[in-house]
Amino acid sequence: MRTPTVKLSRRKELSHFQKKAGLRFRRFDLLDLAFCHRSFVNETTEDIDNNERLEFLGDSVLGIVVADYLFRLLPDRPEGDLARIKSHVVSEEALADIALSLGIDSIVHVGKGEEFSGGRTKKALLSDSMEALIGAWYLDAGYEKVSRFILKYLKDPIETVLANRHRKDYKTLLQEIVQKHFHSYPKYVLDRKTGPDHERTFWINVVVNGDTFGPGKGGNKKSAEQEAARLAYESMTALTQE
Image (tube, rainbow, N blue to C red):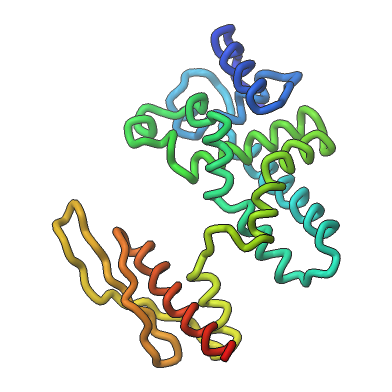
């Protein structure tokens, strides 16, 4: 790997980050590489790699650590339950939240264009950087230490999901129940848009097996679809429990 040269000022930044994250890298250049976004590497004169290979490795390490933990923690749960819990705790949103709590947004290297467009706070960029950090820590310290690091931040979210206190993805929940009962998929239909261009409100219905639920209301199509899915899911589950 072509890693960056870590100057003294950068070493101080990374030392502060390590203290906050509870890490102690032997190789500062490997840690710094985890925070080298493609946009930065495309602009720098230094001949270095970006963090995407570390991200690929970290994603796989994260998956096996969480899968192993859930497999041992929940010996009586079926595969579908384990997969659903895992998908919540290793989601882009969950990893981005951890990255923000660690201050990765302030130390990741990004290019000028990415900087101007608010790239430091983009969930995809933060979650990718988090996976790259996991990949780098795995290479530097090994499986046992990276496993402890991952579970330090994911045990509480796993408990939250098990206690049913997490933010639910109603579109996924609705799709599962529709496939199970009707062997089809929900269809989302825009009902109307209201408000000025800079402050739009979307109203969306969802059609399930010929029945229409909604409309769900939201500041964008995604949130309106989630609300419509919630209305449909809660209505359908209430019927199945009667």
